[in-house]
Image (cartoon, rainbow, N blue to C red; front, top):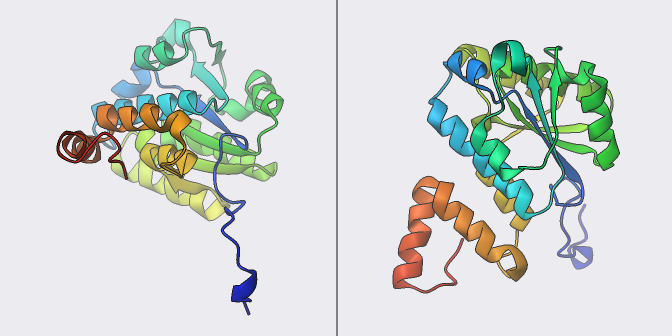
Amino acid sequence: MVNIAEVKPEPSPDLLTPDNSVVLFVDHQPQMFFGVGSGDRGTIINATVGLAKAAKIFNVPVVLTTVAADVFSGPILPELAEVFPDHKVIDRTTMNPWEDSQVVEAIKATGRTKIILAGLWTEVCVVLPALSALGQGYEVYVVTDASGGVSPQAHEHAIQRMIKAGAVPVTWLQILLELQRDWARTETYEAVTGLIKARGGAYGQGLVYANRFIGANAAG
């Protein structure tokens, strides 16, 4: 029984914060995008870049990784590289990033236990590290709209498999707003609302409209 008198306005430890999370981007590369058939590839790119910029706004550590970049899959998504121009990209031979020691060590070095994960393809290079990280005690949040599989079924079945193992499905905009969480946080307000206007679809256009007719501080 909850004692209402003892309830305080404190955030849940389950929430993602800039201090407890790390973002892992997996294989957002041309050859991998060619095979995506689970959704619109432009939408996935928009969500991926939105997620990257959200991480940058809140200084969340980021790990970038590719597979066989020089011999098969091509370079990391240019728009993603532009967000982190000086960031090392870890290239692998393994389909499972968690079987590459550089990736695991990069995650461990952050000291974070909540992994925000996005990549291509969902049914291979996302589900494999998700299950591996969960098995080692990490919490995994899969950004479903910044990930894609070869078919709708492949993507959805992989998401369901990860959920059953304990992963949490999220979207890039959800991550952004969870990190902001209070519109009174003025140090990130302008950057967050600017990102929403640029990549937040109808919500972003709503902010543009509200700013024009209501005022500059119109937000959520």
